[in-house]
Image 1 (cartoon, rainbow, N blue to C red):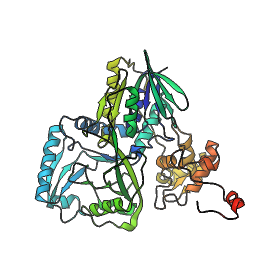
Image 2 (spheres, rainbow, N blue to C red; image 1 turned 60 degrees about the vertical axis):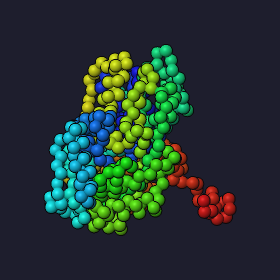
Image 3 (cartoon, one colour; image 1 turned 90 degrees about the vertical axis):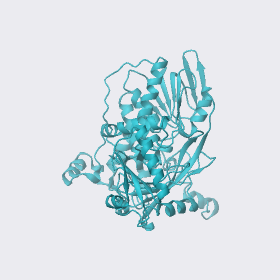
Image 4 (cartoon, rainbow, N blue to C red; image 1 turned 180 degrees about the horizontal axis):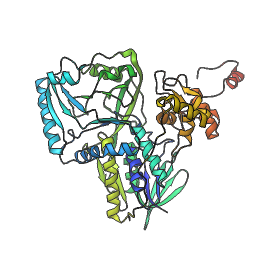
Length: 485
C-alpha cells in the first residue's frame, strides 16, 4: 500500500510529490498523459507573479506571495532558469492610473515588497520600447520569469531520485473508499493508498466527484500565444501587463528565460478540455492588443503560436480543501498557480499531516543538477564530452545546437522523455526557428531506438498524437497512389 497517491503530474502535483519525498513515505505520482507537464503547465505565460493582483484574504493572495518568496531557492536547488526581471502594469489613461493605484494598495495589503508607481518619464527610461501612449505603471520588482515545464520535469526527477514512484499514461477511472484508505482504479492496475492528493488540473472536478466531495465545475479558459524569435527578445526588459479585467491580466508582452519574446494570452471560456487549437481571430487579437504596449515587433519573427488552457472555477479563487477524510484538493489552479505552486505543495502536505499522515524526515537531497547543454559548453568541454560519449559529436537540432548524446540522456534519465515534445521540453530540440522542421525525423529515430518501439508508435505529445499515419508503400500498394488522408 502507498502512503500517498498524487493524481496529476503538473507543477502542483510534481512539487507536492517532491515535498512528500522529504519523508519516509511510499509515494506514487500518477498522470493520464505520457509525459509530465503535459497539461496547463506546458503552455502558460511562465510568469512568477509578485502578488498585487489577487484579492486580499484569498487563497491566491496568500499562496502567491508565499510562493514568490520560495521561487529563487527552489529554482536554484533544481537547476532551473529563473530571472527576477520585475513586472510593469502599464496604464494608458488617467482612469487606468486609478486602477494602478488600487493594485498598489492591494499589493501592500497582501504583503508584496518593492513596489512603486512610476510616471511616463521613468517608465520610458526603464522600458525604452514602451508605447508613447503609456501614462505610467505599477513597477513590482519581485516578479520574474521561469520555464514552467522545466521546473515540473526537474521536480519530478528530484522526487524520483528521492524515492517517489511515477506512473504515466495511467488514467484514474474510479476511486473506492476503504476503512483504512482508498483504492485508485485505473485502466492498468489498482493502487491502494492511505491518502490522496487531487492535483488533476482541468480534471480536478472529476477526481473530486470520485472522492465524494462537494461538487464544483472547472471551466477551461483558453489562451492563445505568439512566440517570437530570439532577435525580438530585447524589445521588452520587464514583464509588461496591461491593466487587468475580470477575464484576466490581459495581453502581456514579456521576455522569456531563453531569450525569446512572448505575447498573449487571449482569454475565452470554452467547453472542451482538450481544445488546444489556435485561431486566426484569437491570434489577431493577441497581436492587436499586444501592439498597444509595444509596437516595434516584427510579425515575420513569430516562430510559433500555441494555446494553453487554464482551470477556471466559479468564485475565482483556488480550491484548497478536503473532499473527504484522507484526501485533499488543489483545484482551480489558474493564474497565479505557477507562482503559488511551491506554497500549495507545502500546504497540502501539512493538511495530510493534520489528518494523520506521519512525516518522519529522512536523508533528502534537494538538489537536482541539469547537465550543461552542448550549446553552452566551451570548446574544451565539448571535446571532453565527445571523448566520453561520441554521440555528443552528432548535432541533431541545428537551431538550438542539441546533440544526440543530450537527447539519449534525456530519454534515459529519471522521469525520462517518451515523446517528441518530451525531448523538446528537456533539451530544446525543436524549439528554434524551424520548430523541428529539420530535427524531428532524427528525434523520432532516436526515440524509436532507445525505447525499442517502432517508428510508427512514436508520438508527438500524447497517445493519440501520431506523427505517421502509415507507410507510403502500403498506401500505394492498396490503391496505386497515395490518398490525401
